[in-house]
Image (tube, rainbow over all chains, first blue to last red; front, side, top):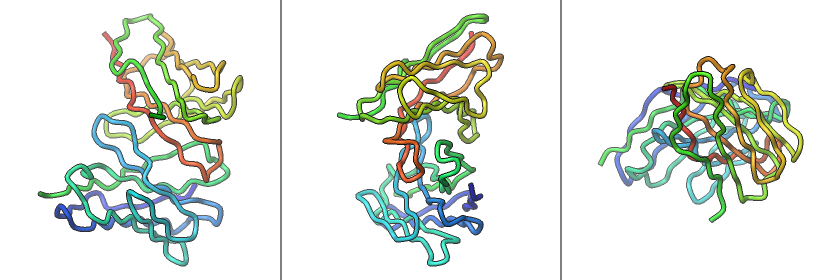
Length: 111
Length: 114
């Protein structure tokens, strides 16, 4: 699976959009981009995933660049409860059963 | 509500003792997984099962055992052979084992040694 690179920390104001970047320059054509988050002492929470097209669900939007080398997770109206560590993962068909979390981005939403 | 239930939330093990962590899902998912998370670390795969009565070792299976006799249940036994069992254990499930199906997690069991 491709390696992903994320900034170690970010912050944003409550009510504003949080844009979390992820670099996955070695991603292969059959690898999906997944986003999870983990709040301290809880299990990881699935947010969204995509292959080539941009995706949106009730939690977030995922924007994948045309060359697929990077993506951005957008939380449109961040709340204090969105404070967590966010993980970007490239998951391929070859090892689809194994999620590998890197160090992630620690997002702090400020009141 | 549909989801994944792990119990207990906290568990203490004495030296030389086997303990079993429960994981139940009512999502009708075929695939189930066990991960271990150490403080400040990512996840490491212990075992996974893509279908009832079948399971495979992950990266760190030594000292652990599992069974998958029912679709909804995937218990993990931490045996006395696991010399460093203190960790946060996470169970997950997905519709299938394919990469386009997300894994959903329970709230975890925190295991400590007395």
